Length: 130
Image (cartoon, rainbow, N blue to C red; front, side, top):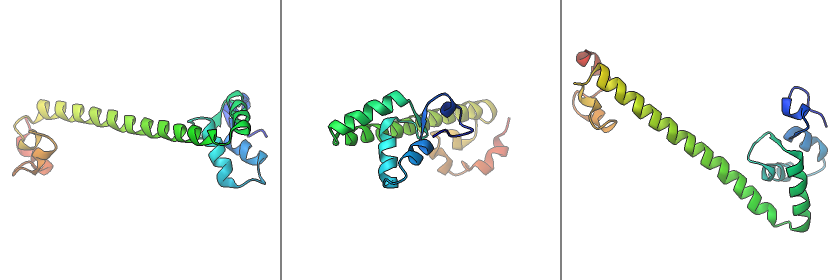
């Protein structure tokens, strides 16, 4: 089932829309679970991997549990890693701004808890601007 407008679908990759169209008579939740077990990506999958996993599921239905759990855990780890890296970047950027433009502001010490000190509110920053 070709899906127009999707680059990877035009290159032969299996998309969820095509997989769903091919399995219209099946339970939609089961179709989504099986597709999610193919890869960590939510929208497409290598057709060779999908066929190999379908063959594996025919021999051992319980194998889908591990593959689905693995796909979901990898997705969660990716999100947590992204949030961690964004948090570090935010702290580094704010620390550099604090030290460069308003080093005497009491809210910058022990950030973000320093903002709870008297005079540490972000609204008092103009008083400490260099």
